[in-house]
Image 1: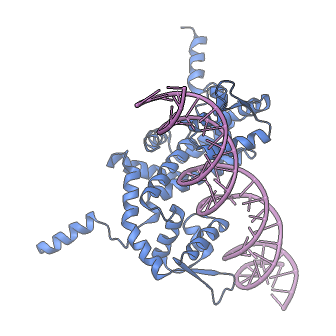
Image 2: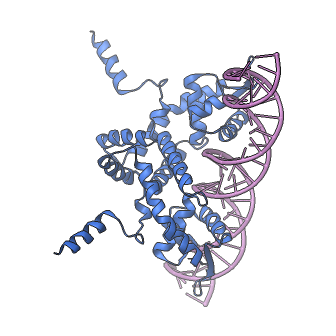
Length: 153
Length: 153
DNA sequence: TTGATATCATTTGCATACGAATGAATTTGA
DNA sequence: TCAAATTCATTCGTATGCAAATGATATCAA
């Protein structure tokens, strides 16, 4: 093999052909699919709430009363998105809103009794959802995966 | 320590307290955040296309003419979603549609010359997006992560 | 052959998700 | 103190994403 051939081979190995882009192997694409699969598993276990709605309820259960924006930042939703989620939870009587006495800009969000009951009933199911989502991995693999995923997010 | 205490301790270790559900540690939640981060990186590099739109173009570039539904299954989009994506690409002149001669139900999708130019120009950038998305991981970690992520998706 | 099924595409309705613009209230800093 | 900057929330527009219903066409099976 000539020096030229070797160089060619190295270049091939390092720089993939531009015409050969494998969508199915790109992180973004697989991340999107993994997320889709999770949402589907979630829906199969909890039909009447979406993952974002449950996230809002679970976080409220965890931290108690918060402003709408603050809640949004805790569950990674921008202001516009969290508003829609909270509006729908409010319409269903799972959360209630009130005005902050001191800072009149803030809208405080709280679980209602019904909302609290719902979260507490659903948390065990949410654990099953996590388990089923990770089911394709062994316990060791799952631990490694979660560590690396957290670094990416 | 009494037998009762030991049993209590074991139960605590195996069955997490129902009141202590850590949203931030659930796969679904982190998956959603990782996906959000990727979309944000994508948008910073490619402002005029979304990841699904690019996926459609890249896949068309890869496989050539396909029916709309077939394309959808190749890029993990249901019929309703892929229709919207293709409609918008068509409106921008990046793909063109035609009817299948034999099977009159099918709508064939093709890249236009402009669409082909766009994909070929963007593929190197898409590689950078993948790289930046995986940047928090070492090369070894990234390889492991991709293997495990693929198992989940 | 034809009736039951299945497939392809479309439409509607609902729920994220986010950028950008707006308005109200608060905080900062010169 | 008071004008500028920031924060909180809302609204609008656009783009996925999916369930369910519908219509057209194609395939299968009795």
